[in-house]
Image 1 (tube, rainbow, N blue to C red):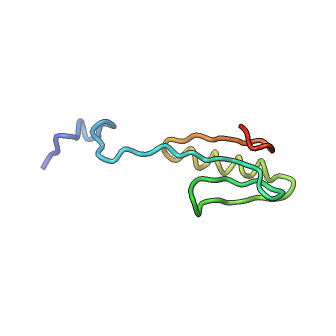
Image 2 (cartoon, one colour):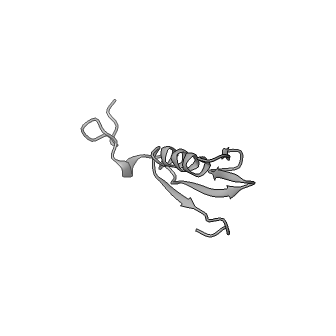
Image 3 (cartoon, rainbow, N blue to C red):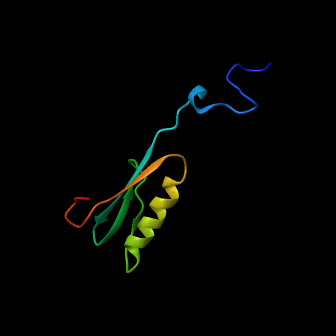
Length: 79
């Protein structure tokens, strides 16, 4: 059976019944290190000299999966 949603073997984005949500990863200072917050329970933390860069690299990798944004908060909590 050929579905009406398939055009040339590909499903157009608008016909996709499951639209992918945008991933927002927030990088913020946390107890002497840096934390990436994606969702409750998905909150990896880094400490040490390269902590901020490691958090940034993680966020970039997560944002590449589907649609995504990265927010980096300063020491005072503002972006």
